Amino acid sequence: MKTMIYSLALAALVSLGSCTNDDPVLTQKDWQGTATYFASTDEQFTTYYKPAVGYVGDPMPFYDPVEQNFKILYLQDFRPNPANTYHPIWGVSTKDLSSYQSLGELIPTGTAAEADAALGTGSTIYNEADKLYYTFYTGHTAKQEVIMMATSSDFKTWTKSKSFYLQGGDYGYSVKDFRDPFVFKGDDGQYHMIISTLQGTKGVLVEFTSSDLKSWAHGGIFMSMMWNRFYECPDIFKMGDWWYLVYSEKHTAVRKVQYFKGRTLDDLKACTAGDAGLWPDNNEKQGVLDSRAFYAGKTASDGTNRYIWGWCPTRAGNDNTAVGADPNEPEWAGNLVAHRIIQHEDGTLSLGSVEGIDKKYTTESPLKVMAKSETGVTENADKYVLTGDAYVLFNRLNVSNKLSFTVKASSKTDKFGFSFVRGTDSKKYYTIVVSPEHGGDDKKLNFEENGEEGIGFVNGIDGYYFPTPANNEYNVTIYTDNSVCVVYINDNVVYTNRIYGLQKNCWSINSYEGTVEVSNVRVNYY
Image (cartoon, rainbow, N blue to C red; front, side, top):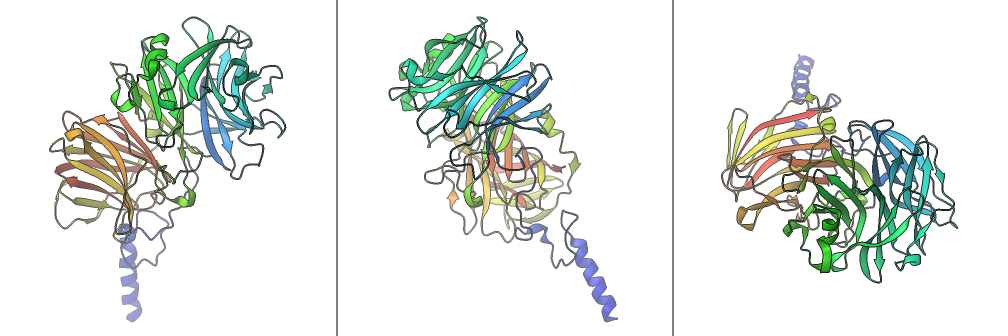
């Protein structure tokens, strides 16, 4: 009799289960509400690419007109890297940006005694005239940076040019900072190469031109950099009636991907004339594209859509607060993240979700409320009204998730957010807050470490200002792949971050000020 009672009790406990199928049977409570049951460590990344060994550094995307797919070259970061020769150029290919096929090493480093002992960012272009792919890249040593070139007929075997060599000192520019060549074809039919460098102590982008990709003529300064800044990884393209320069801000206080826009190339060049430009948040000719957890962003187009790829950095010790505010710099390199570029009528750019990625998350996960605040929560069917400081905690996630929900705020000053690694037993957890700014006319996404052991606001990884929707409605979609988390709001605002422990843990939707209605909450996975 005793055995029968014990068996029935054990069966009842097991039936409480968890959201995964591999939970042990020795369950003594409903563990779905906790944050300490699983060791949530990164597994194989299947959306936001990471090589089997090492990490992705500066991506160099290229649309291959021959094979009609995207190829993304990148600087391979081994950790540890060899002492003197590091960051060879590796590559991946993709058609829909939802999965990538490794191309392995494409352009190796030179020896420690050669100019390309270490490699740096560059760009690839296809020359229809001679049926060759040209990749221009940076050769780096402790003493100098130079621009070098390699060619290939099949994108597999690459031959380094022994004669092509651009050095900044030959043209009155910095010897040590002369890097990141970007090549594009202008409306004039000429090839243009833009290089990031210094003239004295002044940051500048300089221009070279060519008719055949082989012989290049110095064209002088393309654009001066404002306020002693340095624009890394420049990328120039035309989209509709506008020209754009996308760049990555080197300054440690910023480190974000930003852009300038102009009706013509000359308009683009004039954006910083006389250091007259304003900060991107306040200038109609400039903009910010993501948080500082998305860096070295560069673009490519298949003729229909233009996408941007950057890397989401890892953090030493899996420290979610080491986001970039001095002295807590994240590590160099990480996972490959892609967004779709959206162009608005006034020429401004924003970033939206990628269709191929969205289509991966096909299986719907059961949703269960595990806990909620004692006050401020009204639940009606699948809608939740949150007032003041209130929250609803949902059951644990899978490894790769798509979270979607709609938030309807009662006013422009309402404040809400959503948290990860949060459970009924969490001493600290991580929150992305949609915060009202400028009297509620604008919003900004901030990052916080909450809980009794949390530090609160995490300095250095705030988002950028975006206008408050006229209807106060926010359609939120979040894609996660292990620790990489990408948030889109109204398919118009993006916020990339890395949150260790996110996978296989609970999450919540929160309000802080005012009243918000949350509806259409869905969790999908693959």
